Amino acid sequence: MQKIEQRITHQRACLWRFAQQAWVVDSMGALFWPKQGLLIFSDLHFEKGSYLAQHGNPIPTLDTRQTLVLMQQLIDIYCPDMVVCLGDSFHDRRAFQRLNTDDQDTLFELMQAVPRWVWVVGNHDPEFPDNFPGEVVTTLLLDQVIFSHEPISDDDMQPEQFAIIGHFHPKMQITRKRQTLRGKCFVHDERIMIMPSLGVYTGGLDITDEAFLDVLNADKQPWSCVMCMQDKAYVVNTRPA
Image (cartoon, rainbow, N blue to C red; front, top):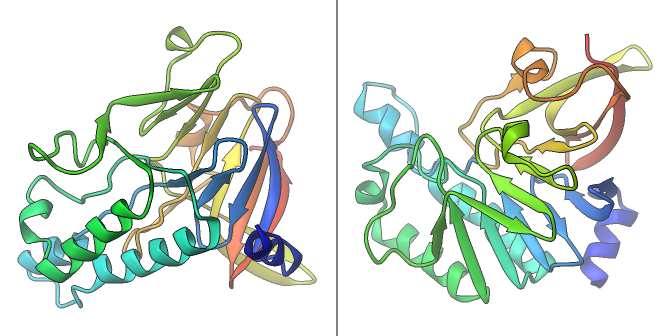
């Protein structure tokens, strides 16, 4: 708990209200739910580098290792009772096969350090190999909060429920003191939160894109955002266009 308090004090994380609960948003791009002892990662996209290399892109293929380092740091800080990976954890169906032995061992060690580990499937990884460690689910419901990779329709949510999703890799920019700041972000309306990607090779979609208007309510109160930039977490309220 002391590590968490220090991160909040130094603005490397911030407290945020959603679904009538208190959450901790970490500037590295993860979400922690203190009430449940739950740490949430989204859109890890393991082995995206090796996928691109297969198609002639001359880029390093160390993205999985770098993402695992981030995950290790976050697990050490938050000491979760449970981890949920919110879909697109693996970049494609063959990513499991390309995962090298060292990275696989590191991933399994991380999983063994946490009492419960849940993989929510995404559009990039709709199936996991047989006997892969951890629980594999389409959605997860905890205390009236639904965890899903892609948007949940109103017909699939009860009036008292909320949803946390990934998929869109949201980012934003703000201008302060004539300086334009850009970074990935978390964003929510009154019922749905969208998490950014934790994967180091993933891009992002600006929250001004019309895709967000199909998911978040633009008619009532401003969206609440946390922008992550330069190891800082900034809470920003924005009115969608």
